[in-house]
Image 1 (cartoon, one colour):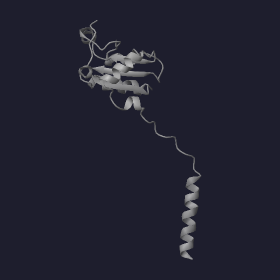
Image 2 (cartoon, helix red, strand yellow):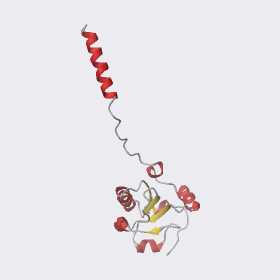
Image 3 (tube, rainbow, N blue to C red):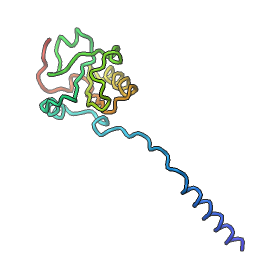
Image 4 (cartoon, one colour):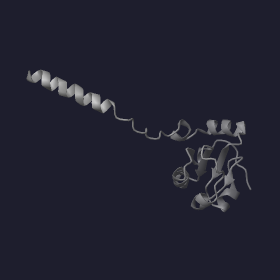
Length: 134
């Protein structure tokens, strides 16, 4: 008798919990944003010339002028939240700097503003191609 009461209580409790509405799933970082791109992957991305993909050099203007990855635009990390490359929060954005530290700060700022596809390429030394001087 006691066993059947315990079983009945367990089944009732389970039934009540299963009727609760499902909670909103936690946001999952996109595959694009999850891991730094390789130099070859970035070169392929540049070659695609997708107008909804932005390559942003977050170093200072002086550093940018000394050599940048082709097609990159310069938006220093400390002003990026006030100088967005696009209003489209689903645009693919790749950020880089000298070592990757400022790029990680820029990535965090952009994600805090709702951008979901931000990739930290890291440091410019990860780029195996030619640099463009401005």
